[in-house]
Image: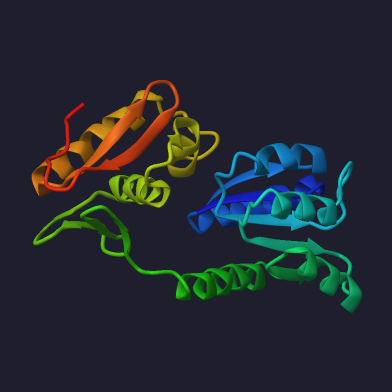
Amino acid sequence: MNILLIEDDKDLCLALSCRLGQDGHRTDCCHNGREAELYIRQEIYDLILLDCMLPEKDCIHILKSMRAEGNLTPVIILSALGEIDDRVNSLNTGADDYLVKPFAYSELSARITSLFRRRNAFREARLSFGDLSLDPAENRLSCKDKNCSLSQTENELMGLLLRTGEKTANRTVLLHKIWGLDTSVEDSNLDNYIYFLRKRLKTLESGVRILNRRGIGYRLEYHDGLPPSTG
């Protein structure tokens, strides 16, 4: 999971990011409200952990701004303010959960798990486009009566493309969502995995094609009854 941790206490930020990393999450950190908005607008995160009292812009301003822009990324507020009014105000503004400092890391981890369990309960297990269907939990891509197994990276990339559909998925966003914001992976690695997915589509005899908008990103196109192109 890609997590953005917005916290002005750098020692706490380091401690939390280390624990989150041990749990298998990729974590980016920033320490003030203005910088946070720049990170948030990239829309590459699965979860935002947001300190309530930040320099430059506070959590309420940040929440209002991102929800007004249609950004629905889950947000857990981390706050030293434990009054009912503080909790209610944050939740009414668009936070998904509220955790009062100091807290045990085990509680934060449990809140994260619970939040995504609730969200996933309302999502369809499968993703579809054209004649394709992806089961993300099983890393399995299907077309009519044919199916194939995908690697984890192929599975994540195919899932992002299916969610985007005919809209163009930005190259940078795809790279960051799959390999992390601070990735040292070469840009051409994305093209390699697109090539792998195109071979999968050809093997499945799908009518879905992955189209390249040069320098911008990739999108899907469906032609009923036609095999996908290789370019």
